Every structure is written in C-alpha cells, then in structure tokens.
Length: 382
Image (cartoon, rainbow, N blue to C red; front, side):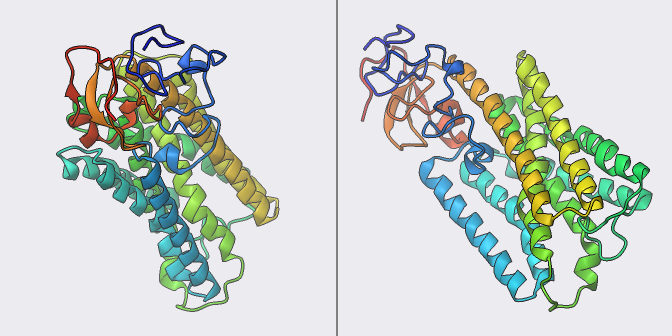
C-alpha cells in the first residue's frame, strides 16, 4: 500500500513502516518529529508524559514494562513496611539498592551489552560507583553537611559558601565526571544508536547514585540501632529510593546520549540544550533541596520540588530519544523481525506496522536477529 503521509510503498498495516504515521489519519502531522501523541519507544504513550519506566527502560515492550513496574511497587511497599516496623537501617539499604538493582536486571533482560556483559557493566555501573565513592569522600572531607548521622537531608542552617558548594559547584563537578565510564566504554562502535548511549549513561549515573548514597549514609547505617521510632524518615527514604537515583541516572543519560549524537554527526539545539538542561536540573534539585531545608519548609514541599525537577528531566529525555529514534529508524532497510512491543512477526523497515514502535528501540538480541530483505515487501507477515 502507499502511505498517506510519506507516499512510500510499504507493507499493509496500521502504521507506516517508513515514517511511523498512523494510516488513514490524514489529519495527522506529516512530519513524525512533530507528532507528539505517540512516543516512538512506546507508541501508546504521549511524548510529554513523565513516565519513569518507559523512559529509562526504553528497550522493553509493553508486557515486560509491567513486570518492572510491579517489582518497583513491591520494593516501595517493602521499604514502607520496614519503616513502619522501625527497621530504618534495613529500609535505607533497600531504598539505596532498589532502582540500581532493577536497572541491572533490565540490562540483562534487554541484553543491551550484547556479548560483553562484564566489560559493559563494569565500565558503566562499576565505573559510576567508583567515581561516586571518590567524589563523595572528597565532598565529606571538604565539607560534611551531615555530621550527626550521615543523612544529607537533615542538615539545616548551612552557610552561603556551603550552599554554593553543595548546590552549585558540586552538581557541575558531578555532571562532568559521571558520564566518563560510559564515554570511555571499549568497542563503542558496537553500540551506535542514541538509545544505547542513553542506557549506558543512566547505568553509570545509577552506579554513582548507589555509591554516593552508601557513603553519605554510612554513619547512619553503622550508628543507628536495629529498631528505632520511625519519625520523619519516610521523606528521606522517598528521596533515597526514587528521586535521587532518577535524578543522577537521568541527567547522566541525557549527557551521554548527546555525546552519542555528536559522534554520529548530529549536534543541534536539542542535544546542546539537553546537556544544559541536565546540569541545570541537578543544580535546581540540589540547591533547592538545601534552600528549602535551610528555610525549614515542610518535607512534603521538598518532595514535590524534587518530583517536579525529576519529571522535567524525564520529559526532556523522551523528547531527545523520540527525535533520535525517528531519525535513525528512517535509515533502516526492510527485514524480517519480531516486534518487542507487540510480539508480532513482521517484515518492516524502521517502524512496526502493527503497533508503530520504532524498531531501533528493540533489544539488541532482537536487532541482531533481523533478517534483511533484498526487496521491499508488499505485505507484512502476521
């Protein structure tokens, strides 16, 4: 059939496999990059939707995403149970490891690393953790904002110099150094797509977050009794389990994805703006948290502020990845494959003709299994 939007001859399907447009919707915007109603990695969602899992787990299809959502919900429920029981030390440990462990499982599930898991995981998560340990130890030597129990969210009354150090200078230093493990990953040519750079950057950021939190909370982990009155720890645990790792992982992912785009000769306002947005978001998160703590505002207000910052970063990631996936999908040839989102056996180019997902977001194993076709097919295989 002939696509209503790009006028290419494509396999019969609900979506055009060349441009991703929904067939029969002549009122839809012709330029796929300007269509915001369907996120290229997960077409059932809007691009401007601060969804956690479809943003930082871009390789997973619809069914697998639900499994990770449930695992995350169970982890949060476990933290809540430990908090109510007064087992704060255990709750801190679960909160620190929750998102990084889920991401490690995701990397294995999606086989992003291809045939070199030790190298990829060692350079990304391991390298990020090493940088996190070094920087956090240096930070505590230069200025220890939490001398009592090692909790970075309990310091108040900090000086202007300390505020500028913790809220302005240190986030910039972190964003310069966190991406290094992913940027110096060996055999980077085996992972050319922007989505790969994003995932490796997020992995490095989560490794950094894990190490940073362990060092920062080391005093609390070693000094708190096994059972204490829960108090207001629920606010700190929420930041530790959700907002802190998402902030560190997402900002690093944006920067690495922008560098990946630069290496492909694609560097524009979206990529440059992404780097600036990542640094600005980290500063806003850290500086805002310190300011609101110093002003003795409600911990709930601080959580709302952190949620707004993290949500904004997630939306920017989706914009960047959406544009990258659409651009890279346009250069793919026809091949037989299986869509990782709807699990249909298809003959397609850049988009699944059944669900509209950009096939560049498929797991590495699926992309390796593609069987190129010499000629353009006239009908998709169901």
